[in-house]
Image (cartoon, rainbow, N blue to C red; front, side, top):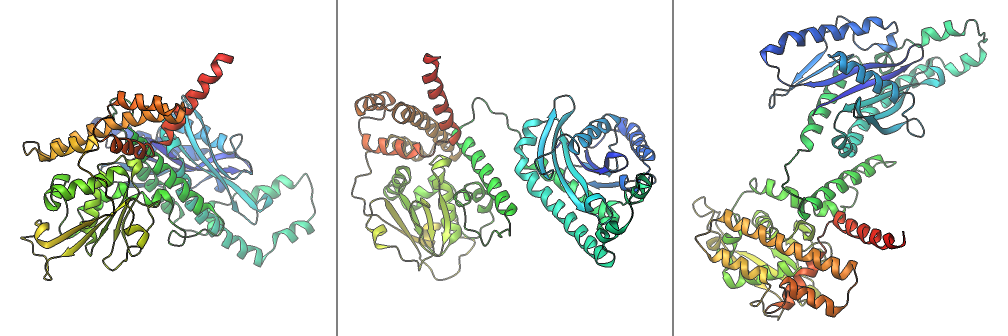
Length: 541
């Protein structure tokens, strides 16, 4: 990440000053080695102009701290000032603004400011206890400076969460030192009893203004610790978000994934920032966390031992064409799909394969649970073998149960690990009496592709992707026509005929469209509503 992190301090004698700075240096070419040495030696000279210990972190003779990322070769360099004079000016301006005019209410907390010329700044101001300071506290800030405004704004929850941890560590350490000093010599009583003279006041204050952050925290390895913290922050923030070239507008799946990630970060920040913060194990799981496994299942699937379903075609071969069609029909209709068995890896692999049939926004999954979860919480549910199915679920036509029983009591050998049909028996049961051989149209086209052995698994995956995009576009049209415009049933029927959703399997097509409508992103729905309201206001204007 092309950014820079700095710790700033408001000195009572010299005003805002930069105390410590960490920047990322990409591997230089041989031609750039000598300028790098020049900038390093030049950066140490800035500290010669400072006359207060409170304005200084490392001595002028200190070489600074350097960490090297073995994966990328990027070096993280920390010193009192940046290595380049141009960056020194940018950081200096960010330091002054963060400790003077650009502050949030209460003077403690995060704020964002900047421009295209001098860069954009994420700043978090805070106080450190000092028994000798004016008001018994000193003012600091941690700033992150970058030229990419969008990237910095998108990283706000991440930066806020981790910078707060660093700030809380500094404050708690300094508070212990403050309490110890107050216990030895209470400064409030000393100041109340001492005489005040305007002539000697500046001399009285000059000695107290020189206390360094190391002295306030009694942390001998403070700067090395901050270097590690800032270096990790730059590395983690840089690898957290990646840029992708999108050919056209982002898909609904992309928008939903972005919204879920944002919700998770905001929820985590709220829980960690609440008074008497609750640990993750104590707080109830949120809806976004229940669906988070959509992002992580694929990564964890290869780590699970035992046999696994590799693709939709593999699942179809194991279950059989008839049972496979029945199962996929329930998935596409939005019914709850329950797998019950003793192998969590096998069940999770089945869910990973089946979830590829749906838009991301329609997936709510609990991979493996020791108790039944209601359908409004998840449409994919994995259960251990001894979990009973409630009576109302077993008799419901809106659910399907797949019982997985072991064919052999012996251990699974390596030779037959992929031969799932010889290891397990699958029993599919459902109270649904509606025939599943007519539709929906998407399922009919998918089965044609799966049954064609001339098409590879990758080709079938791209075919499914195209089918999903085709029907997702139909969902958008139907949503705009029925939900936003509020048209009647006759007009809606005409639109369905225009979309090719009528004819054989019409009822299944309509159910699919209505279910997939729940998976539309909030961004798209908000955009449509804003456009409609703007269109309603324009005639009157």
